Image 1 (cartoon, one colour):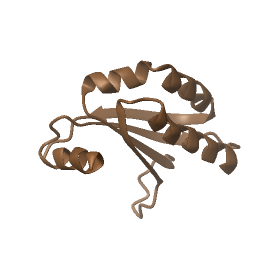
Image 2 (image 1 turned 45 degrees about the vertical axis):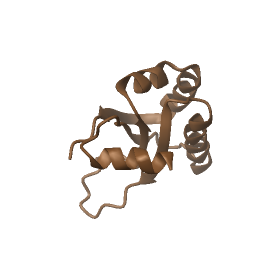
Image 3 (image 1 turned 90 degrees about the vertical axis):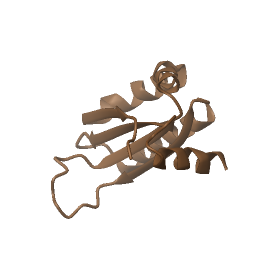
Image 4 (image 1 turned 90 degrees about the horizontal axis):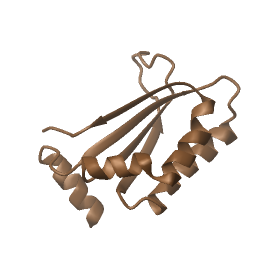
Length: 116
């Protein structure tokens, strides 16, 4: 029910919702097993950081070939900008990022408040 409430509020112009988007291009030689481990660890942050309300991820399936080498997208949802900031500073997130970043060739991090 809480997830539905967060999604509903997102449909109403983003009141109380902050999206944290990460676009990732992994370095050549990073194995699928390593990538899967990072994804599992990212998803596990939900169990350690109360401000993180949801997590989704996927890989590029576009037919437009405009991905610029980025292969993975990660999206976390927060109820407030303060919650997002607490997440960024949280020791579990810092530890995760410290392990992930050396495997990335390029990364884009983009936070936004959805508008209707």
